[in-house]
Image 1 (cartoon, helix red, strand yellow):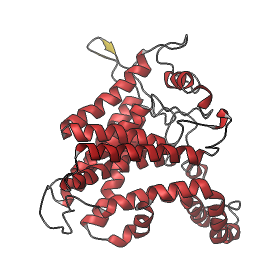
Image 2 (image 1 turned 180 degrees about the horizontal axis):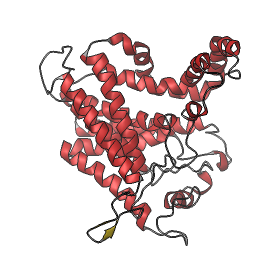
Image 3 (image 1 turned 90 degrees about the vertical axis):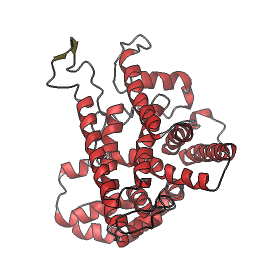
Length: 366
C-alpha cells in the first residue's frame, strides 16, 4: 500500500474514494426519481420527446441494451470497486479471516432478507408471494460472496482468471447443455437453460418474469469481480491521471469484447476449421445477464468511473458529485426506502416536478 500523501493527481491507496460514492449515488439517483427529472428537462427542449430518447429510459424487451439497463450492472460493478478498499482496511486492523468471513456472511444474509422484504409479502403464508431469489439486492449478495472468496484467497491475477472462467463457463453452459427436450443454445424468452434451471429449483417461488437468477449468478459475480479489478487499480501507486487512462482502456476493451461476442464474430467465416459466424454468438440479454452483456455494461461502467474519478479525485472538483455522494454513501438504505415507500417519494416528485411537467405539456403527471 502506498504511503504517499493524497494530492490532486493521486488518490489515497485505501479508505473512501469520493468518486466511488459519487458514482454509486449517480446510479441510485436514476432509481429514486432521476428519470422524472430528466424527462421534465427533455420536455423543455423537445415536444414531443423523440422516441429514441424515451427508449433509452426503459428496458430493452429482450435482446439489446439501453441506458436504463445499465443501472443494475453498474450497481454491482461499484460494489466490486469498493471491495479492495474495504478489505484493505480490515487487513490494516488485523482482523482474523474468521472475523472477515463472519462479516461477509452477515452482509450477505442482510442483503438477502432485505431483497425479500422489498419484494413485499415477506411474511405471507401463501408461497406464491414468497420470491426467494428475484431481486437486485440478492444478486449483489451472490456477487459479493463469490468476489469476497476470490479476493481473500487469490492474488489479483487469480481474480482476473476467475472472472474469465465465470464468463466463459456461463457461455459454454448456455451454449452446449441441452435441457427439457430443447436444443442446446436455445435463448428464447421463456425457453433457455437458465430459465429451465430456475423453474426446476425455485418452482413456485419464482417471480414469474423472464429474468433469471441461479445460473445468472455467474454473471452477477463476474460483474462484481470486474469492479474489484477497477478497485485494485484505484489502490495502485500510479498517478491519478494514469489510473484514469487505464480505466478508459479497460472500458474500451470490455466494450469491444462484448460487441464481438454478441455479434457472433461477424466477418470471420472460419478460423482453424471452426465456423465462427453466429455459431458462438452470445447476444446481449440483460434478463439472462449474458457474458456479452456483462462485458458491455462493464465497459460503460469503467468509462463512467474514469470520468468521475478524473473530475472529482484527480482534478479535485468535489462539487461535481456532492449530491450523488450523499446518496451513494447510503445507497442500500436509499434503495430499500424507495422500494418500500416509493408511493410517498412519487408524491414528493409530483409536488416538485409536476408543475414544470404540466407547464410544458409534454408529459403526464410523474
